[in-house]
Image 1 (cartoon, helix red, strand yellow):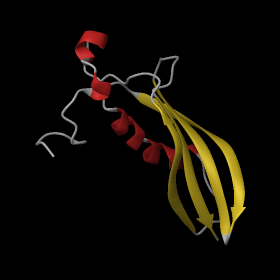
Image 2 (cartoon, rainbow, N blue to C red; image 1 turned 60 degrees about the vertical axis):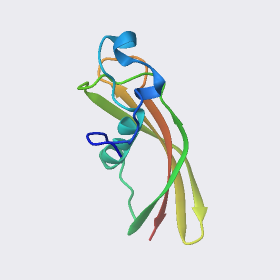
Image 3 (cartoon, rainbow, N blue to C red; image 1 turned 135 degrees about the horizontal axis):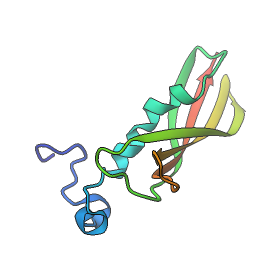
Length: 116
């Protein structure tokens, strides 16, 4: 990985020159995605489980960029909860948006399993 990079990518995000598009550098989409694990415990609480396992994600979209230094917030929506062997599995849609923007920057369906 090149020194000073977090993703190993040597191209600009999405292959675009950010200064030409936005007049400011933009954060890598996967950096925005990584914030979801910080937001989740702030957005919802799972009761009655002693262990949770991050299974992964079903769907990720990056509808709009995040300028470097922009403040972001998140909301969560429970899409589904299903019984699985020994516990239950949830799909939670997390939407990350730049504060003051109308279009989200990252929308991800996270998949987790919880066990008593």
